[in-house]
Image (cartoon, rainbow, N blue to C red; front, top):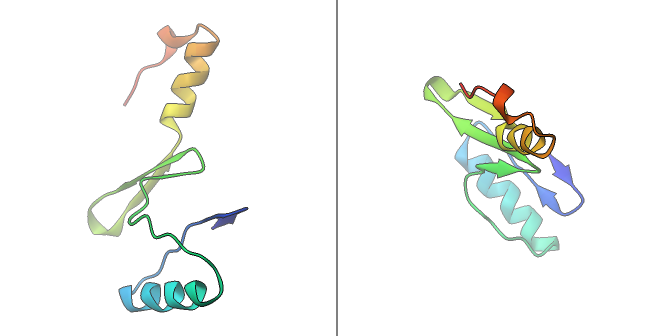
Length: 76
């Protein structure tokens, strides 16, 4: 995924990630921030069996708080 100057790279094999990062760094200034936990306002959680959960809990919480509806929110 890419948005302006933010890039998220996913691959099944670590070797592929290394190769992609190497190719990108030959042309662009690249900063590796490690395993993504947040990206463009989304929270990313990793579970067992290679599961990935993407959600916007913090964003939704902020909206509810802003519009004084926080009492309606029940976190999972």
